[in-house]
Image (cartoon, rainbow, N blue to C red; front, top):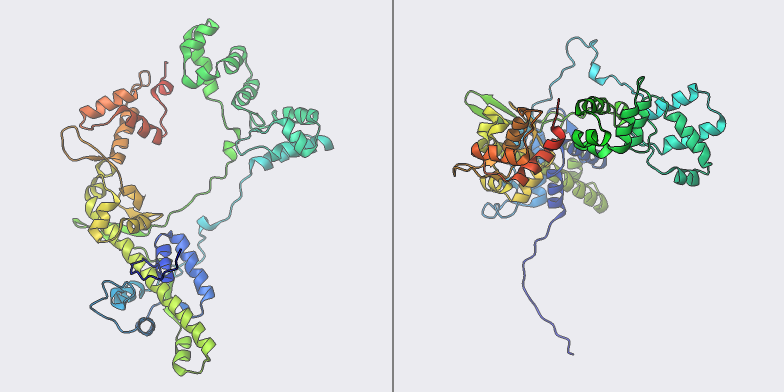
Length: 476
């Protein structure tokens, strides 16, 4: 075996740290971007935030970019994304020179009630309060604390008592006795170990004869789920009308006793772009409110020009200056790309913005990528966690990308979201006593010009969280 030296020439794609940063910023949500910029402002002394971006700030940033990247080669600037001509500094200045709106003027005594802090009582706190009011002994309180620790947010204790007794070193008899007392607490059904026990606990709270009701819960829980009243009536030897009335009582029970104590925090969405209708045209506008306006620090720029810094200080300032310039450029590039994608979406989905979701057209990432001259992966990153405010409401940009369902007459395909709306509308208008099966819905859609299979109808129905026909049926 001989050692040899050889040379070969090949091309490799090298992702620079700056390009990695640009890609990372591109796929960030608005909240993540604001957090990242705030973090960079704290770490980088070269970066400064300003309320009003002036022309001199633009000039300083432009000069810094030129010093770092060298003179611009106009012939190659389309191939090298780092060339300065690709970055529209004037556009960046015009986009950010307007100061943020000041809403502080006027009557400052008016309270903003949306900012008032409120607290809600959790299920755990409510049960602890009931334990204290019932005068539990020390060993009962210890067992109750252990049971509450293993209780989920719906009010169920799904961990076997044997395991709790072993883990917490508490006699299982104490756990069983204490659990039976907790099951008498409010809300009814709390402390159950499964759905059947939860319904039985609630049945005990009813002030009427519950013999038949308890029998159905204990022996026909599967038929209850399927609304198979005939099987229950036949097994119990009773009239189906009587069975239906008993089942109505069971259906009115709460399968998740702790649901009322769930913390339902409201999450507000801040749109990245706005779409307005002006005359006959739709206009796209970027939402710049809340995004920090960045500039290069004049102090550190003068330090470099003055030459008073040593090599270590100069290298540090140069490194931070490069990072600051690339952050400013990456943020502007991100905003410009979002604008291009939003504008392309509006052009392709004009009927949606005029008439609503029923007129959404099939569209894939490749369509928009071709329109704006970018790669599909870039479009995918741009549309992730980005939102558009339109005359039809607020939608995530990914909402507009749908697969197509063929038309039976050979016409234009329909978007899957439009088909879902048709399915939802058909089910909303059905006869509750004779609900539409998936096959029937598929046949009705085909008559309406939509070529769709039964299994596709079933898939869309499940995505809409609509029960199958057997569970939607109401006899009386």
